Image (cartoon, rainbow, N blue to C red; front, top):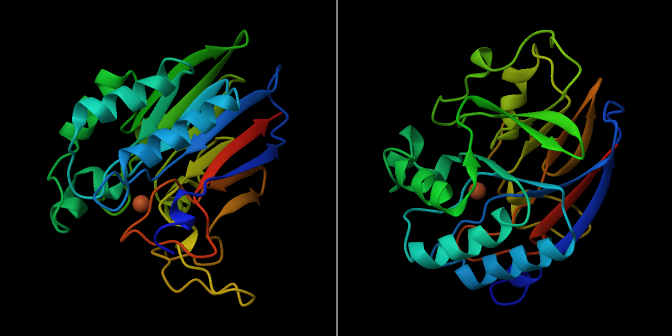
Length: 256
Ligand SMILES: [Fe+2]
């Protein structure tokens, strides 16, 4: 639980048939690095090195870069740069990265420090913001939202009820419970983390005693949500150094 499973990254590949892209996209979805005394930068680097072998076209990181505070910033930057220098990398903020919720849990009052680290590493943090990027001769839109537990999820300024062009829209939002706020808007794939898959899963029963979400019916995986998709990855790191029957996950989404 403490020494083996947290470092045994599992690569998963899923096909997301949104049927809108001209050329398929290989999306790397990582989340919840949780750099801390429980999760070493070495294990995060191992996950990034393995991810790069999978040759993604683009990478999304859905928050919780740290658990409480940043340390070894230069080393963390070097590791994050490895990813951003190989694939355009976009991120959203997690509840642990700083903000109203983090301040109540021994973390930073704002996500300024994490934002600065990402900026120096070449990762674009989107906070209730949209970005457009050209991959394989097609332009896609990526929307990153603020964190739900810090009351910072504000989709109204960046998403529309009906899109005005035919670009594919990816949404990055740390907490999958934010889907209820996103329901009225027009998008194709929502990428989330936060659950860690529960971290501990009781064998055979599948019971997950630690699942910090309201909707406990969807702890991980790809969900066909009407005419769009939601993907929740188990993430790379953990809280308290433990994982059981719930390996850290490197997710590749083949979006077609
Ligand atoms: Fe997390």
